[in-house]
Image (cartoon, rainbow, N blue to C red):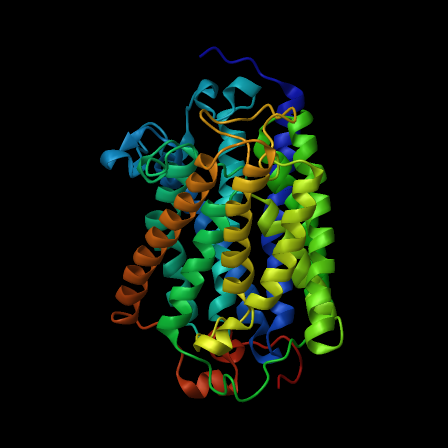
Length: 422
């Protein structure tokens, strides 16, 4: 197709890319504040190393695997002509019709891959070898993230199992369900931390947690509104819904805490923000204000209750990646089948997409959303298990017990966050 540069849309996408990249250091603060003092640096480093490894992998071959033409039966894209992204034509951009160059779009998509991998790290806090985590980031983004991204956003094989097109505007399946399932698998493979279920693992720095959640919310405007690939009314709707859903999710989470525990907490408020952001991500441009309010509130309530499941089932998801990202991602993805309102002026509407049940649609889109979520869960779970087992029985994935007890920061990085780590 002919390409005509749109400077306004391009400028917006450059800003959106910077906003999404900020989310990974923000996640480092969010996760770092939730762990104990003796593992805060390791926790933050797991996010920072994800920027480094995925930042290289994506531009060498990852973008081609996710968004190139079908290969391996459509399981992934072909990196042919996209390796290194040198000399690519601007007409090859995912948003060529919006006048955005290929290199800008590739950079935007890189930030999605980075944050997705970094999200997983919260499930393995205090006990995973840093070297094993570093290698895991490369293998996982190559073998798990790119096929799901290609299937949902690139028209590949994994998106073909549903009767209609899965609506995932900004990453409910590709990012949050994908990362949540991977986190669950790794948590099970690693086993529980010493003292899990017997002693409290309290956040060492709640101001860090609240700062991280605030910066995540700030960056998420680029995440959701940027996924329109243009500065238009649909981006505005996504931007508005990204304000509404987290706000009401906080209220839902704190309501659960007040009823269940007697006190609303700052950790709950910060977690509610993230739960609302996760749930509205797949639906950001495809629901109206009432839909955003409903999705946000339901996510806040359900995720607040889901974070306790790890004690019931015995898996040590250290920082509630499963309870917030897997559960929140499923909630948002499935609720599109009820609240989708594609007659509301949305300019982005996939072929065959229907309004949700509450807006005159039939059952097709609801079934599509459920199947899309299940495909992501199964593929991510199986592939992460294979990667995890391979690492476990070769280089090993868990630090020795004495390192876990004395502090992973000093053992793995030779430094501590504070003068005296406890």
